[in-house]
Length: 267
Ligand SMILES: [Mg+2]
Image 1 (cartoon, rainbow, N blue to C red):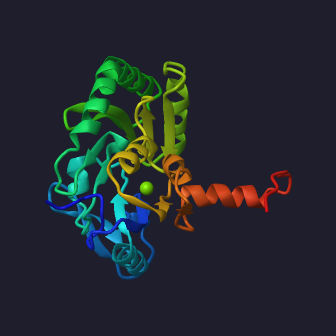
Image 2: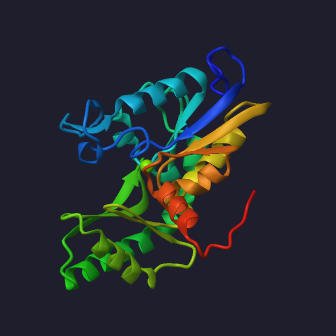
């Protein structure tokens, strides 16, 4: 039996990379720069919807050749499987709601933990979903909102604007905030609005996975890589954080650096 805590040589991995996927190592064609791109992710119809630039291919190949890569993605497990990349360790899907084993089967111990939480939040998630649709209808916002389910669990609410009017998504997120428990979170990035119950988070799954399933030497270095504010918490648990220079996270950093009134001082 293969020991999935180790790399292919049977040793504890010396570099582990927790890797967000969308807008990190590939993106939609609309978001790609001019030039050659390679399709790597597909819709159920078979149409390509995620593309890598040559630089992203180099980056991914380098990571794969030198480290144990653990995808940590918002994609549900079905959508994750339509990203055709050669991953060979555990994978974290649905913002941490599901962990897949290296053989693709669901990691049952994590599933049991999340299933109990998801069951107790389900009714409230459904109520918030209904409330959100009502607010959007009253305000005449042309959106689509769905309860995201994976492996039989209702996990979070995903909203997209049909005309990419991001400010209306922000308005909607703010309007629904008053109905949420204090420990739930609302997240915006580009044309995505997501509403998470307190039990969900990429960092919760990666923390559990590293502690319980991944073998590490004391010199093992863990790198977290992502583009979005929802990635910050898992990247903060790592030794190093790696992000695209054009990303929501790095834009935030740039704005902080450019603020002449900032009194934040660090060496
Ligand atoms: Mg991303």
